[in-house]
Image (cartoon, rainbow, N blue to C red; front, side, top):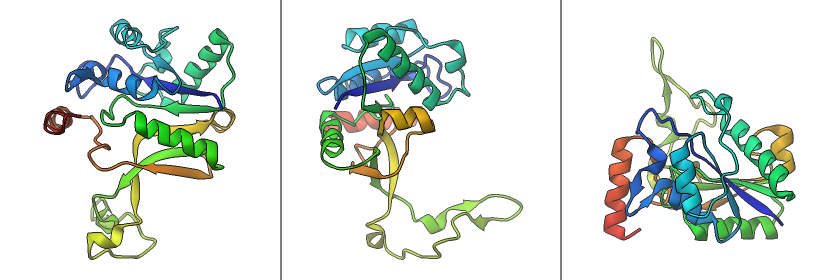
Length: 227
């Protein structure tokens, strides 16, 4: 099987300036994403930024193009940027691919072991997608839709989890890893395609950087646990 990791890393960021170049511990978010994949497969970074391109090349990723403006706006979709990156990679390097990994830089504690576990599942079981998950922190019955009044967002199943221990089989996608069949990705233009397998990550490994508070928390965790 041939794999390719696509790391989407726009230069513009509303919440944190130059977010993808911010450091957790002594490594940038981009470097951490590249390091998690590089021993297992080629890594291509899709960016519109010369600074990000320089950081990516320094850490062993391929950046054979800068992302077109129409794929670098706030409204651009990850799936479109990913398909563009894969198409360019195949055209430039003349390689056929079986599975595409989408690896966001905003998950600093995803690591090479998680990527290795995903590859093992792809090689030994019949999945079209493998996605990373973690346990659910909040009870689903506490999700409400705001309007003139609050109303339950999840109507079915009408089940209550009085204790967290009863939520063992519930999970959420943590957005750290998506690995999808290349041809189906292009045909269906989505990352989640049945049958879907999963690898589990704990809540610390699932930390996602969206705000400055997230970044400070991730650095605290990195310093405390030497991650």
